[in-house]
Amino acid sequence: MLTRWVTLGILAVLVSTHAIALPADDAAAVANRDTEYQAAVKKNDAATMDRILADDFVLVIGSGKTFSKADLLEQARSGKTVYEHQEDSQQKVRVWGDTAVVTALLWLKGTSDGKPFERKLWFSDVYVRTAKGWRYVFGQASLPLPATP
Image (tube, rainbow, N blue to C red; front, top):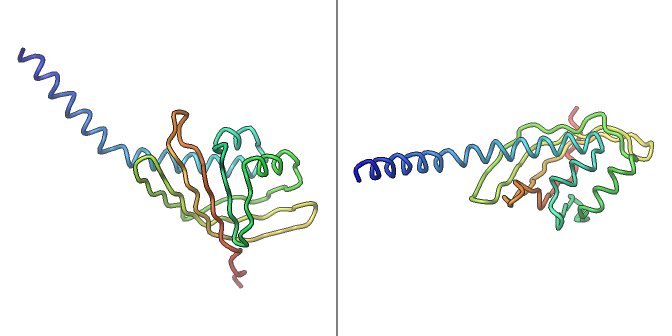
Protein backbone atom coordinates (compact mmCIF):
# COMPACT_ATOMS: atom_id res chain seq x y z
CA MET A 1 0.00 0.00 0.00
CA LEU A 2 2.84 2.38 0.88
CA THR A 3 4.51 1.63 -2.45
CA ARG A 4 1.31 2.62 -4.25
CA TRP A 5 1.16 5.99 -2.43
CA VAL A 6 4.84 6.68 -3.08
CA THR A 7 4.34 5.88 -6.77
CA LEU A 8 1.29 8.17 -6.95
CA GLY A 9 3.25 10.92 -5.19
CA ILE A 10 6.13 10.64 -7.65
CA LEU A 11 3.69 10.72 -10.58
CA ALA A 12 2.01 13.82 -9.15
CA VAL A 13 5.36 15.60 -8.88
CA LEU A 14 6.33 14.60 -12.42
CA VAL A 15 2.99 15.73 -13.84
CA SER A 16 3.10 19.07 -12.00
CA THR A 17 6.72 19.66 -13.04
CA HIS A 18 5.81 18.87 -16.65
CA ALA A 19 2.81 21.21 -16.49
CA ILE A 20 5.03 24.04 -15.24
CA ALA A 21 7.43 23.53 -18.15
CA LEU A 22 4.73 23.32 -20.82
CA PRO A 23 4.29 27.05 -21.59
CA ALA A 24 8.01 27.43 -22.32
CA ASP A 25 7.99 24.21 -24.35
CA ASP A 26 4.89 25.39 -26.20
CA ALA A 27 6.45 28.79 -26.92
CA ALA A 28 9.57 27.11 -28.31
CA ALA A 29 7.48 24.72 -30.43
CA VAL A 30 5.41 27.58 -31.87
CA ALA A 31 8.51 29.70 -32.51
CA ASN A 32 10.05 26.80 -34.41
CA ARG A 33 6.83 26.18 -36.34
CA ASP A 34 6.55 29.84 -37.38
CA THR A 35 10.23 29.92 -38.41
CA GLU A 36 9.58 26.76 -40.44
CA TYR A 37 6.59 28.45 -42.07
CA GLN A 38 8.59 31.58 -42.99
CA ALA A 39 11.30 29.38 -44.55
CA ALA A 40 8.66 27.49 -46.54
CA VAL A 41 7.25 30.76 -47.90
CA LYS A 42 10.77 31.86 -48.93
CA LYS A 43 11.23 28.60 -50.89
CA ASN A 44 7.65 28.56 -52.26
CA ASP A 45 7.32 25.18 -50.50
CA ALA A 46 3.56 24.69 -50.82
CA ALA A 47 3.66 21.21 -49.24
CA THR A 48 5.14 22.51 -45.97
CA MET A 49 2.84 25.52 -46.00
CA ASP A 50 -0.15 23.21 -46.51
CA ARG A 51 0.88 21.09 -43.52
CA ILE A 52 1.22 24.13 -41.22
CA LEU A 53 -1.77 26.22 -42.34
CA ALA A 54 -5.21 25.36 -40.95
CA ASP A 55 -7.83 24.68 -43.61
CA ASP A 56 -9.82 27.77 -42.54
CA PHE A 57 -6.72 30.00 -42.35
CA VAL A 58 -7.12 33.73 -43.03
CA LEU A 59 -4.45 36.39 -43.58
CA VAL A 60 -5.36 40.08 -43.33
CA ILE A 61 -2.81 42.52 -44.71
CA GLY A 62 -2.46 46.19 -43.82
CA SER A 63 -4.80 47.36 -46.58
CA GLY A 64 -7.56 45.12 -45.24
CA LYS A 65 -7.35 42.62 -48.09
CA THR A 66 -7.74 38.99 -47.03
CA PHE A 67 -6.16 35.79 -48.30
CA SER A 68 -7.14 32.17 -47.66
CA LYS A 69 -5.00 29.07 -47.39
CA ALA A 70 -5.84 28.27 -51.02
CA ASP A 71 -4.67 31.75 -52.10
CA LEU A 72 -1.29 31.37 -50.38
CA LEU A 73 -0.74 27.86 -51.70
CA GLU A 74 -1.61 28.96 -55.24
CA GLN A 75 0.82 31.86 -54.97
CA ALA A 76 3.58 29.51 -53.79
CA ARG A 77 2.89 26.96 -56.52
CA SER A 78 2.88 29.63 -59.24
CA GLY A 79 6.47 30.64 -58.45
CA LYS A 80 5.66 34.21 -59.52
CA THR A 81 7.28 35.54 -56.36
CA VAL A 82 10.96 34.81 -55.82
CA TYR A 83 12.34 35.74 -52.41
CA GLU A 84 15.88 36.85 -51.74
CA HIS A 85 14.88 37.58 -48.13
CA GLN A 86 11.87 36.36 -46.16
CA GLU A 87 13.21 36.47 -42.62
CA ASP A 88 11.82 37.70 -39.38
CA SER A 89 13.49 39.22 -36.34
CA GLN A 90 12.42 40.32 -32.88
CA GLN A 91 10.19 37.25 -32.69
CA LYS A 92 8.11 37.03 -29.51
CA VAL A 93 5.75 34.15 -28.73
CA ARG A 94 2.96 34.39 -26.17
CA VAL A 95 0.99 31.29 -25.18
CA TRP A 96 -2.45 31.12 -23.58
CA GLY A 97 -3.42 27.47 -23.17
CA ASP A 98 -4.06 26.05 -26.64
CA THR A 99 -3.58 29.39 -28.42
CA ALA A 100 -0.31 31.15 -29.22
CA VAL A 101 0.53 34.43 -30.91
CA VAL A 102 3.81 35.14 -32.67
CA THR A 103 4.76 38.77 -33.25
CA ALA A 104 7.81 39.68 -35.31
CA LEU A 105 9.35 42.12 -37.75
CA LEU A 106 9.48 40.65 -41.27
CA TRP A 107 11.94 41.66 -43.99
CA LEU A 108 10.79 40.80 -47.51
CA LYS A 109 12.94 41.29 -50.59
CA GLY A 110 12.65 39.72 -54.02
CA THR A 111 10.70 39.92 -57.24
CA SER A 112 7.01 39.46 -57.96
CA ASP A 113 6.03 39.00 -61.60
CA GLY A 114 9.55 40.15 -62.43
CA LYS A 115 9.22 43.43 -60.50
CA PRO A 116 11.55 44.01 -57.54
CA PHE A 117 10.19 44.69 -54.06
CA GLU A 118 11.62 45.26 -50.62
CA ARG A 119 9.77 46.10 -47.45
CA LYS A 120 9.62 45.51 -43.73
CA LEU A 121 6.44 45.03 -41.76
CA TRP A 122 5.19 43.76 -38.44
CA PHE A 123 3.04 40.66 -38.26
CA SER A 124 1.10 38.67 -35.72
CA ASP A 125 0.47 34.99 -36.42
CA VAL A 126 -2.06 33.03 -34.37
CA TYR A 127 -1.52 29.30 -33.80
CA VAL A 128 -3.93 26.81 -32.23
CA ARG A 129 -2.99 23.45 -30.72
CA THR A 130 -4.73 20.61 -32.57
CA ALA A 131 -4.48 16.82 -32.52
CA LYS A 132 -1.96 17.24 -35.38
CA GLY A 133 0.14 19.81 -33.50
CA TRP A 134 0.26 23.59 -33.72
CA ARG A 135 -1.58 24.94 -36.78
CA TYR A 136 -1.40 28.48 -38.15
CA VAL A 137 -4.99 29.80 -38.18
CA PHE A 138 -4.80 33.57 -38.58
CA GLY A 139 -2.26 36.16 -39.63
CA GLN A 140 -2.31 39.92 -39.68
CA ALA A 141 0.35 42.08 -41.30
CA SER A 142 0.95 45.80 -40.93
CA LEU A 143 1.28 48.22 -43.78
CA PRO A 144 4.90 48.38 -44.97
CA LEU A 145 7.07 50.42 -42.63
CA PRO A 146 8.63 53.63 -43.94
CA ALA A 147 12.04 53.09 -45.50
CA THR A 148 14.88 53.93 -43.15
CA PRO A 149 17.67 56.16 -44.47
